[in-house]
Length: 167
Image (tube, rainbow, N blue to C red; front, side):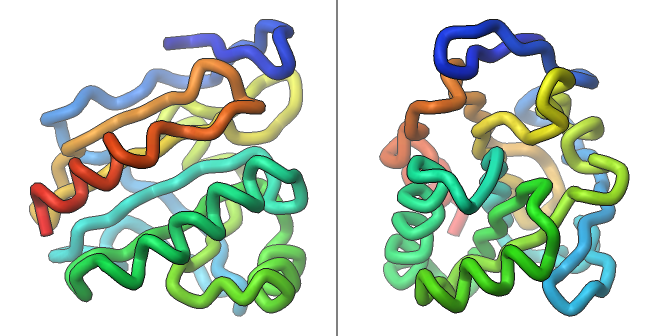
């Protein structure tokens, strides 16, 4: 999918989405302490990459809070990371205000490295599309979900089922 809609308007995505079964593309993101994070930092874990346009929007807020709640029922072999182009400082503020501690937030604000590597950067907005990627402990992409309408929530059940099969 090289397009999504945002409130009904077609938006174009940069890059190509990786195929399930191939090695997950590496990325460089920025943590709230300004340290770089990449795929290697999660090696050997089931990694759930949840990309959202902005934590400061109602649907993104709901989604990351939901994953934070779901994380409690998952194995310690699972890491959930919410990726957005929000500044790391804003992500830290949002997590504190929302009480989110089981989901790590990472920022793609610098060069949209993740957005381009995973084909989910919305060109017109320089924001990330709403997606979920599940990376197996061996580094292969096990599940991919791109939500066609950015203002809609993802299929949580399908994503969590993919995680549980790996954990």
